[in-house]
Length: 85
Image (tube, rainbow, N blue to C red):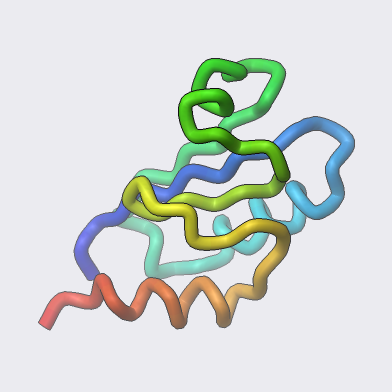
């Protein structure tokens, strides 16, 4: 798989955010990818730039892919489009 960049936008005290971060960390296909966790308190400018109002929000290669929670299988299915041929 080609490397991808995944950004997960989260905030504290958000159980859905914790779930998404756990899912992203479970996907072995992401070993060669860049995963960035952006916290609203620590990176408010990036939240404004991406117009993130609802968390968790997950971007893959700069495209909003998921709002809210998703499963490991959902993420793996989406990542198949980046599989090298």
